[in-house]
Amino acid sequence: MTATEDRELRRTLHSTLGSVQPPPVPLEAIIRRGKGIRLRRAGAAIGAMGLAGVIAVASLALHGSQRPTVPPAAPAITAGPDGVFASGTADGHPWRLALQNIADPGYPCLPGVTINGAYADWVYPDPGSKGVVGLGPALPGFGFGFIQLPADINGVIVNGRHNVPAVTVAACGDRYHIVGFAYSLAEPLRVTVTNPPPGWSRAITMPAVSTQPPGPATTTETPGLWINTDSASREAPYQTLASGAQPGGQGWIIKVQLGTGGECYEFDAPGPLGSAQMGYCGPVSTPDGPEIIMALPLGFPSGTGATGYAVQVSPRTARVKAVLSNGSSELAALRVVDGRKYAAFIVPDPLRLSRLIWLDARGRVIATTTALPQYGYVQFHP
Amino acid sequence: MTEPRDELAAVPDIIDTDGGEDFSAFATSRWPGLVRLAFGLTGDRWLAEDIAQTALARAYVAWRRVSQADDPDAYLHRILVNASNRRFRRRRVTEQPGDPPETPVEGPADLVGERAALLAALHQLPPRQRAVVVLRYWQDLTDAQIAATLGCSPGTVRSQLSRALAKLRESPALGEGDDR
Image 1: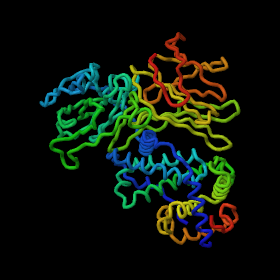
Image 2: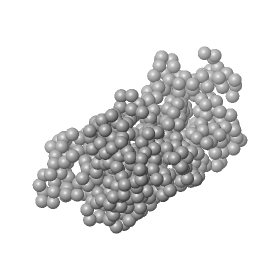
Image 3: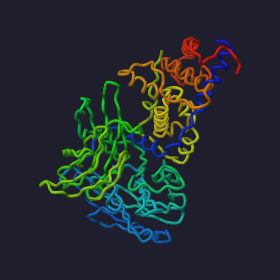
Image 4: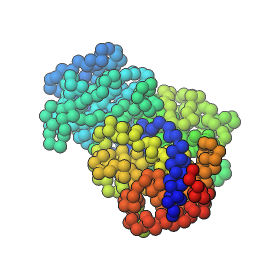
């Protein structure tokens, strides 16, 4: 190759690639995908243990000033049926963090840390595991966090001024030494321990609360989506929610994976031109929490191609009816995965989903909504 | 020729993703370059962003390892190139490779033609050769650095580059030697 060719190729390549103007870095999506990768890498069965027995409760109060009032005393150990390990008020709104079974009644116990009983972070005993969550417009400006601690750490100090005691809680047959707290998002979160044991540093780095859209300034917290960093990996394998064939004969499958990174859905449609795929992770709902309606358009962002839908439904839901834009409807059968009930179906292009209807075992309408996502998820309270 | 190995296969199961702020800064600063590099490897804008996301997500998973690497960028490039190759391997099972990219190229008319021609020419190359060209002429990496990124020997890099350039010479993208 001549020097001129060499120079010309370099110039053209720089001109070509330099003309690409990338969008802002999708940091939240990257971290969410990273969690998904981590989850997929480590398979583990979800423990089918006995129902939780709650040992302890500690409390932390936050008031309108965002100054928590925490007694720097020994942990208050209280047995309780609901697994609350931290609670208080923030800006006048009550909050509570609990370790509870998040499986539907009658299914194997599935331990999760929940905020106000609504959103879960699947957990397992693992000192160092920690998570944060925001409640979005329901309680803007506040984050809520938990840290699993080794038995020889009695608590943490939040932002240098609030001593928060750790307590030991049992759920699904395992014991957790855990601390929970609320904090203002107006300042950087700093969590420290006084006498760190070997292998632990004085400062504990916490993840940042998930925001919508990703970014620092004008965003709000994503409601209920836990951002969890674990020092070990564990996941449930992807499991099929529904499968079938599109009108043209192309097969499809919708899968879900419950893990420490949330609830991740995947819609695959292998075809003659290659496998089309769309995935998205959302909050983990509890039996009493909002239902998550997830839309997975294969053609995003072009808008062409089938859209897969998955709905994590309440225990009393027996069927979900999907009404499409041409007036037709289909009944989606439910499937229980890891003790949680889901409906999944696809809407072929160019049809759109117009309405979802929840039915009980007798065919009576429990709820209906037309507020449906085209991509990603919405939360719905039936 | 050695196939690129999966970096994550060597990452221990105990993964520490602490240092979120460091990762955020790292990802933000590298994102534009990664997208452009991925675009050079794929010729597809959307795919490039997706692969760049994948690379950073994998870096997030192995953040301790990446942040402590002597050259985190080299580590990241390796992840990205391998992600691109894996994507290509998956697609080519059912697709006919060799079609020019459909991604529109923006700019003045003469540049548009030139850039489109280069993208089309790059797309005709096998993935490994394409990677060698982009890493050499866009990233300005040495043979040794390219070899480390691709998981092959410097000799393989040179032979791949030689074959790639021979093919590219047939493309109008290289011009006729005029110094513009």
